[in-house]
Image (tube, rainbow, N blue to C red; front, side, top):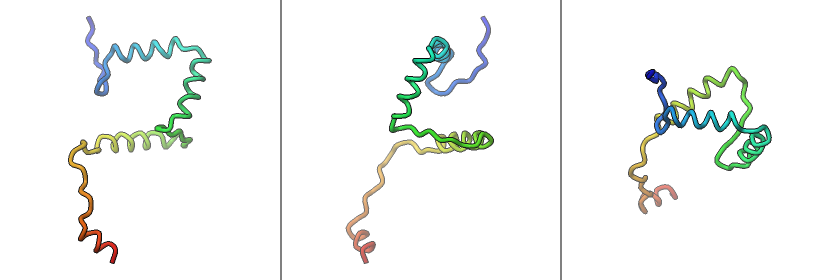
Length: 89
């Protein structure tokens, strides 16, 4: 048995990657088009056209932004009444 040298993101393993590859390898062109068209209407995603040479910098930025995110914890306190009065003045 050979040892797997790949490092996967949290929640991923070799079996999950294999299933994903199998899914896309067996997908017809029509299915791929329908999947793409459905993703365009997804409100939680944005597609952008960027110069190819900027892609590595954009990926690095996204990676650093997601790893620096603070875990959910205490909610930010709402301004107190006295603070609200100061802001109004």
